[in-house]
Image (tube, rainbow, N blue to C red; front, side):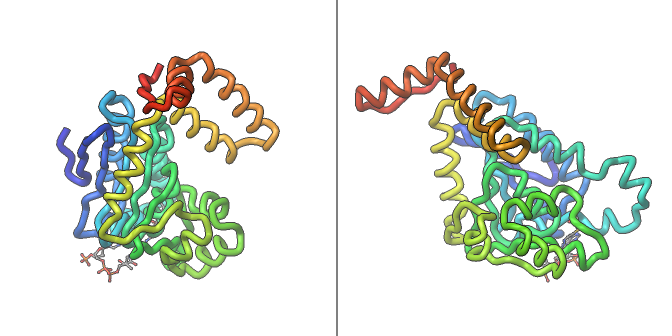
Length: 258
Ligand code: HXC
């Protein structure tokens, strides 16, 4: 399917979805988020996709929600459309692993979008921020909640209240990103990580995602019980037999998602 604001490529079982509004530093408007939701749903259904990379350009992952689209809206407009919630729910519903590969600006909704992915790999030139305070508003698609869980209250308050940006080194130190890589190598590193994930059992990777995400939604005791039960359940899969046999036979496992 041809999109206007994103580019989609599938290679070696990895779908790369690139935000592509260079004239506005990939600012998120309804068109882009609608196309992104569509592409994510398609990738999740596609048997030729086992992992997904969400990225932008070297200058910007996304500089936030499109201010020109939002500026004239009323409370009722925002409330009735539940602004960007249906579109971002599509990202949160993807069952396959999604890596955010962030270079340049990831601000406001851009930072929030990256935090909705399963993990973030960023380039040395990345800059994260929640500068909505400068516009007289606050984050609207999870930034006050997710950033706080990633980096703790003090840094989250600092970022949201002052609108300052966090560079890649600080983002890694604070747990916002899993790794920082040279800017020119961002896609190579993200692709290597995605291909590694794609080589695992597709059942086990989906289960990992469900279990880790559950740690945000439940108590430790309930989360551990959930993990234990799905760990037990995986012993009903062929992939568990294959993975353990392959180890014992000193060969590469061939997973079949069964
Ligand atoms: C619309 C944007 C934009 C945005 C940049 N542009 N960010 N357009 N919405 N969020 C446009 C500029 O208007 C400009 O268009 C072009 O992109 C290049 O931007 P410049 O400002 O000229 O670039 P630069 O000087 O390099 O500065 C980069 C920047 C700055 C620091 C990222 O653009 C900036 O501060 N942007 C806004 C960041 C922001 O406040 N984000 C939060 C948005 S609110 P022209 O046509 O002039 O060349 C939000 C709420 C989320 O995200 C809640 C969601 C529901």
